[in-house]
Length: 241
Image 1 (cartoon, helix red, strand yellow):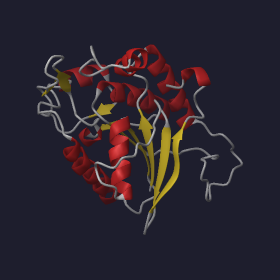
Image 2 (cartoon, helix red, strand yellow):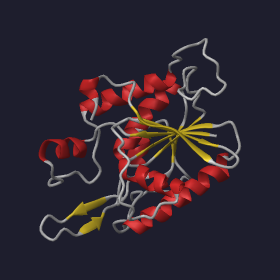
Image 3 (cartoon, helix red, strand yellow):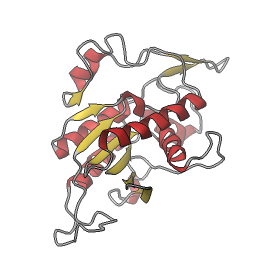
Image 4 (tube, one colour):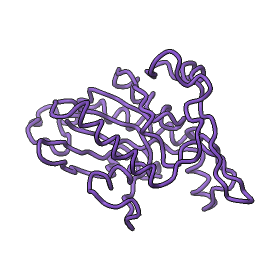
């Protein structure tokens, strides 16, 4: 199994932070900016493209022969679903919702005076179906009142979730030839890498991940190979965020 982790395109909250260095005024569930959509289009074309048709697919550690994505999963946060939908269209694949891929913290509103983080509903099933026709959701009765509807997620809970995602990846796709792309988030990427590397949740390290960057992990019988991290070949310098 090969896993390609794709961070979503630039969101309105990413732009806010880049401009102000503050999360004051952040959106509960930020949408992509225009630049974020451009980034998503470029990574989608990159994943679809065949860079060197003559390249051997044996030990192709830089995907010179292409990516050959067979499964596409996404977080249910708006910025991830929008990015995933653009990729799904380019690859002609269904976009499967995987709730556990959400960003650390979940959907919450931060009280600007007290700093308390208060859980919010998240997008409803009706909204998701209306805006993202390629999105595949579980069961006909899920998310009618929103997909989150719970308190803010704490760091230890995110670590448990990352270990669960790692377990499920192996359980579902294991020793198969599947090539999965998951569209998710920067802090959860760090939680997942810490789970792979068996690092503590409070580990004082941060793995940088730019918007729409690609990271590849090969799951072998006795190990996980980190093939490359934070790959940005598909973006021109002025679109790197």
